[in-house]
Length: 248
Image 1 (tube, rainbow, N blue to C red):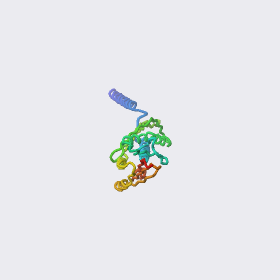
Image 2 (spheres, rainbow, N blue to C red):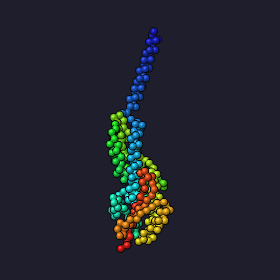
Image 3 (cartoon, one colour):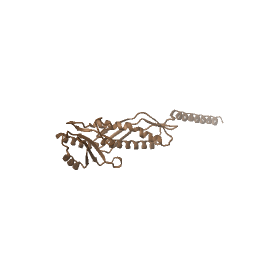
């Protein structure tokens, strides 16, 4: 009997020790803010869709405005757009690739709050904590690499997570369009007071784009190039710039 009683005591002690170990493990690892990535997948997808959308809208805008989100004050007005002069008084004023990257980055930083607002508009169990976003754009050979660090934390009453920063390669060859425009400006420099319409017609056929020229005043021509694109469901990409002449 004594031996059986000792065994019972050992079993009870073992169960108690096992229970204490399991309880310790639970409390040591319990975190009311522990992340659950699957719980936040729909948030991330919605946010990324919005970021892709505003990126494509930004690309279309800076194309129309000659690579600028905030064009120079000397730009010419065309409806709601400001079109920069790329060539004026024998001076070439084409922005660099790096300048265009910064312009699109600025556009994205200003428009990230729109995507956050859309998240907050939808009824959900989440609350959001945000701080100012940062963005970088790299114009590559065939694509545009976009990174947005949006600094968004989404929380429920039991968990919180910092949503993954956005990084996406946009399948749009901006560099090709930019280089075509530079070829046109190089041709313009050969004769500062002659519109290079013949050259434009030739290169448009070669590079598969169309163009318009619009007179904004007696000395200013607005050149608008149209390229096929997959942006915003296939909306044409327009690249605009102005050249001023001395025709008076």
